[in-house]
Amino acid sequence: MSLDLFAEQDLQQPARVERISDQAFVLRGFALPRIKELLAALDTVLLQSPLRQMQTPGGFTMSARLSSCGDWGWTTDRDGYRYSPVDPLNARPWPAMPGVFLALAEAAASAAGFENFVPDACLINSYAPGAKMSLHQDKNERSFIAPIVSVSLGLPAVFQFGGFERSDPSQRISLFHGDIVVWGGVDRLRFHGVMPIKPGHHSLLGQQRINITLRQAD
Ligand code: SIN
Ligand code: FE2
Image 1 (cartoon, rainbow, N blue to C red):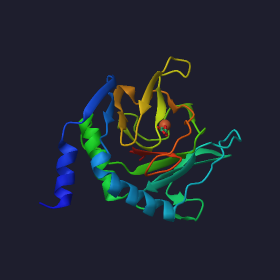
Image 2 (tube, helix red, strand yellow):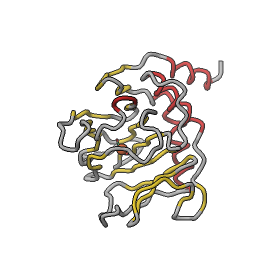
Image 3 (tube, rainbow, N blue to C red):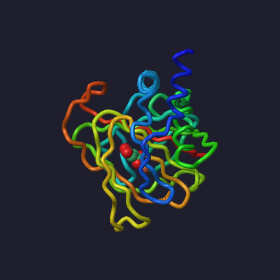
């Protein structure tokens, strides 16, 4: 049996699943069986479309550095937030979505009860120690039912998973290298964010946390 078949089999093993809301789940260690392939693909993507700091429409600089791959990438500037088929940094289409991203996203979505998930956008966030993501809703996608599949890599983080108003209380969930959070359906528009990353060193990714979120944008 080839190594690849082993990997496919691993994805079908029951992962440790934690339900955090009706249609929201943390899949502990779900990405670990494919992690080497995933990191190699990520390197290739980031060589073509490097991480960069972005300005919010309000004029703030985001503390996480961002890039994207897939048909649609997410960008922000003084004019607003939007998905674009072109990377504004190099005026070329975003790098293609790697096959391992697609396979992992489909398997994770299915483990969370969302069948036939085919993402067309992948947002990549890199957090140095101290970087954070304020509470927000993911609202630039066409469908508010299709899930968000969010893969954590590198340094741990405290993820905030809130309600439908910014001021609602949030759960605080520790996320580790290889964990995947999936939220969709009735939970799709919940506010969420990331607390400031604590200093540390990860054996594979150094002093950073990388999060990749797979979405159906169009
Ligand atoms: C995001 O909401 O785009 C990022 C979430 C995370 O970094 O875990
Ligand atoms: Fe988000």
